[in-house]
Length: 142
Length: 354
Image (cartoon, rainbow over all chains, first blue to last red; front, side, top):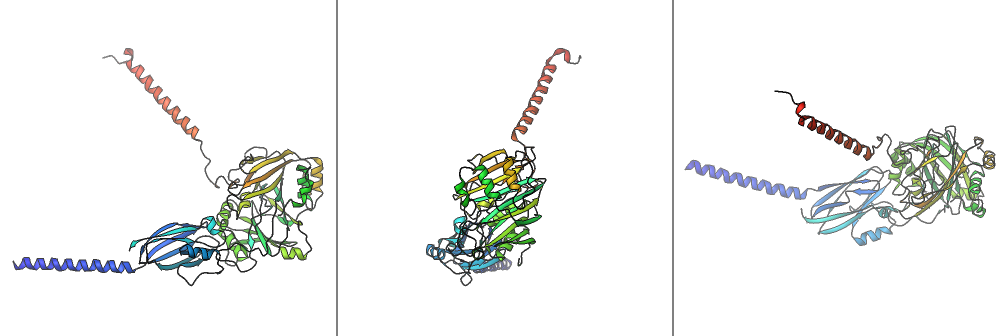
């Protein structure tokens, strides 16, 4: 009888430990940035559609394989309209607006606060018309 | 702000209007906005001559000053390393136009117009009037890097177009045209600077896809490509009109034309006889996904690789009909053998006694 109690106690303790660990792990993973690679090749984004969670940091690793400069600007319609007529030579101060020089790689981390979808576009002259447009789909909490 | 570019490879490619690449005139606009009108240079219809004789392609094209200021440039893919790049003759292109369009003399004035960390090798540098010309060797990324580091503003389709050419020939000719310098030299609107490129090559072709560089799918592209070959050439793709290229002239070259061409600067190589072909490029950017391959030997087998329709080293395609026929023949033979076996097996005399 004493032995059975000991076994039951050990099992309960083990279960609690495992549950705690799982919860802790989940919390840790939620706080770690989600890595999303995007390749630019022949002036197109690949993939052109990415799905990310709400509220969790997302690190976009953007690799430009082209011998020309590109941009990755994510935002709503008003943001893109502003950039279509903008004159900033280089984007560097905002994580949602990145310049990627020829044959280089840039990383930027963005946390999306609400669900929905946003476009990412290269606003260098002629690039959007050529097809440098993609979509971030922001889904459920991650 | 763009140039047209034509290239011909009679063994080489000829760009009459090379790539329309803009040389940066001021700070580049990183966001939105089109390329500013400052330094705009209007390029009109491009005219290019590609002559092929004795294993050498002679490519003559002109950069025509059509007003504006600033600097602009072009990049032209070539089929091989040129032996010389020099100022072209003064009337070769005009004489060719007159030969094939004798009733349109009034059009003559508008005939043309129109590395830091780079791995590109600079094989040759030449200055001709207001043009700074550099012959380059390298892959698509090398050429793109060289161009951007030298002030060329490449359009978004440049990476793909450069790769299209570099996969077949790593030789490019970059030309930077300083419109302000042209103005200072007293060049008037309509004046052209002819350039004569001599390229030893066994297999001529004329780059056409380069003409669509920087243009959107529906934009019109017009250019005239004159070919002078020893024999009537076979072209690929065939200029049928609906594919963006049209055969406007196809006949033995007249003695007077050859004599006139031969008397121009650098044109002593013109043979005593030849075949004159005029291919008019008259289509949209989306149509020009190919180059013009030329078989000038008389064998009638232009290269699909030179036309950009196949990759170098690709196995020759096997036609489906051959496979179909092969399997059909094998099937019939098998059925025949089975039939013979059944017939023989059914005959009493064919069985062993006992």
